[in-house]
Image 1: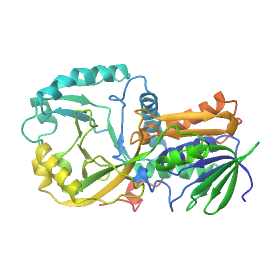
Image 2: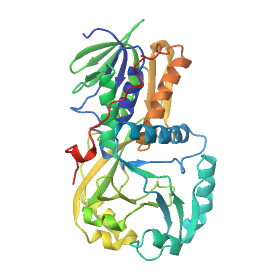
Image 3: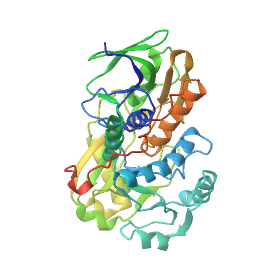
Image 4: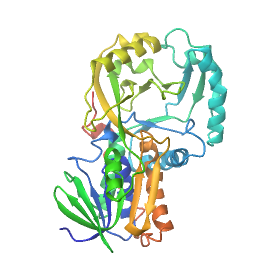
Length: 387
């Protein structure tokens, strides 16, 4: 058994790494526990890689609050440490009268969320922004603050800084059981036991399993697979902005977006699964994306697809994040964090500490070097430019 650490963070995705980084800035010992062989190797690496303004979140929800706060925190942090971000802006495209009629409501929602920059534009203005769109556009809603970002570098930055601040990173370490004691908790793992005074559950797809280990039955994770195409970099001139669909009751739909690497991305699909490890692509998914692509941007689907991939999102039966603290067990749960978790990650780390403080478990004062950041190697020298 390892010596007792003050905080064990379960889950080395973008949220868990953000929490570990934040906690390691206090005068405490931190262990970040990840089941896979690297941080960000699960849901985080298959994110749609958008830094969201939160314009379309449900007003008043935790998600809306965390995304709005996280947008500013991560945007500022990215400049400090070298995370690639490009402020492309976005446009929601209405193809039907029903979608066009929904645009004023979406703009009102943005205002309620504190985002005031959205404007409704006509079809000519939409085509002026994205000439390669297929025929039939009726109107659009601009979101100038939407940006594209690198999800790998973000997670890596958090983990690198957490380690630089003294956190211990335990890879290939899957939590298999939880034993809550009077003053500490023993986490049983595939690499031996880890004893911690406090535990933060940021386990993503396994978040409900960890939560049930503490005696709760508050949410169930349903893996939601999203398949995407990545097109050759020669297609980038077609897509200078993120092209978003008007959301429906079935979800946010399929988008076309430039990537920070110079490619163009089409997707995702949305399919609930039972297998929490199934990130395979499917013939049905390919057909669906090609059909959508032909309607949205016919010239794009005639170009070369250089990669396809699938990611799993930690969807639950609830429409909002599931955040809570259990003081008696010295336990904080950050569950049900979907694709917006990349944008919200730094705000969620702050919220984890706020929940601890509300439970009289606040960590001691920050270390004097807390504001020192690790600056990452510029992207061009990274050797990690996919596709």
